[in-house]
Amino acid sequence: SLTETSFKRRHKIMNISPEPLELEKFHSELMHTEDRFYNITGRRLSKIWRAPYGAINELILKMAAKFGYNKHIFWSNNGKRSLDVPDYISRRLIRSNGKIVPNPLYMTGDETLKMLFDWEANTPNGMNGAIILMHLGTNRKIDKLINILPEFVKIMQEKGYNFVTVSEAIEN
Image (tube, rainbow, N blue to C red; front, side, top):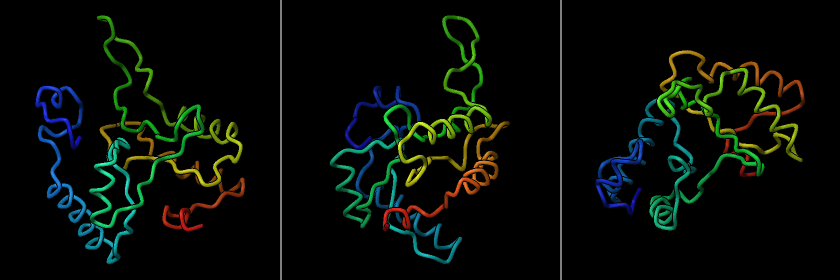
């Protein structure tokens, strides 16, 4: 959050820093990411980005644009559900009303594949142009959803889909 200055309110929000993000810190994080990408790949990073949680407002968009990041990308949504794969949900069980119950947000690999194929079947253009959000690093110890990718890619290619980078997708 760039604007919430109350430490108490910030502390209640999961995964948010205790300090409001300042322009210098924002720039530093972008440059650190660019440097790491270059050091690993030897290539320059495209100036395409996604704000954590997709949380944007006019201020954050202007800050990003100031550093050349004027293409903010969201994941796809067909009006019924988004393609934000819940790989960041690591607890199968949660406590609710003093009882341990299944976490309604948790999806297994099989459930996630079903969700993806249902999304494709119930969206007018299927997966054409769709952007699926998956996270490389999650807290899951078992049933990591990244493991469904080979099967998903194979089935989708058999259906005639091609996979491209975000840069390629938005250029066409």
